[in-house]
Length: 81
Length: 231
Image (cartoon, rainbow over all chains, first blue to last red; front, side, top):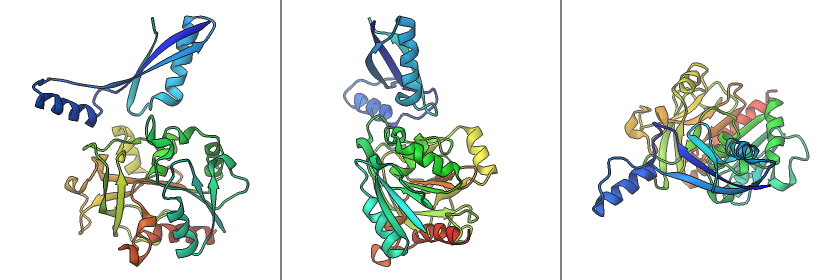
């Protein structure tokens, strides 16, 4: 079956995110001061798998092998509904 | 003795690196398009700077997963030398040759300027022609050059003398003020544990001739040649 999977890749807690910091400053300049702002990347992938669990496992392998760098990133994988 | 310079789509320091090796240092050097793979053994391989795959995903991430990297992994496992410069360093880190990674600069813009770096370990195949503590003037040109690793990895790098270069001032003081990109402990050249892989963000090929404004980087290549000749 084809399963739509959503993979979110974000920086680990405590890893400096210079882009998020720049965006936060720009938002503040526009009149939207914020306490905290972080960014993440979303990948929507249609995975061919026997069931949803297998599809999520396949998405996890994709994140581990390419989409995320374990030194700086954490990720979540879920079925995209 | 024969060297190889690997070309990916988006490499743009390949010709400069080839020139520095072949014409300036006088060592036979092949330019290898990544799809060809390695068809023979080389004494040393250089992955040059550039923007392989447009830096998509993360700088070096996609090139690190191309088939030629398996050939390069075998080359490294055989104990032969690999030098990654700038994008080549990013590719090498993404390939797991050293702990840690190179990521977006603390101030997230592209930095292109001359810096000074200090030789932290002159006892490696890449640095033997330098004195320990020698300061070189050399250019950097990157947006994703901030080296980071876990505190445990940084401690191990220090203990095993795997730090080749640190940013510093004219006098060789590696103070945080000299750090252009926010790298941990001002580190900008990292060795693997076996000391046959060096990944560095500064460009030695751009500092290999007087006419370029510095020839301080040339001794990286001369060290490699000396090491291979001595074997």
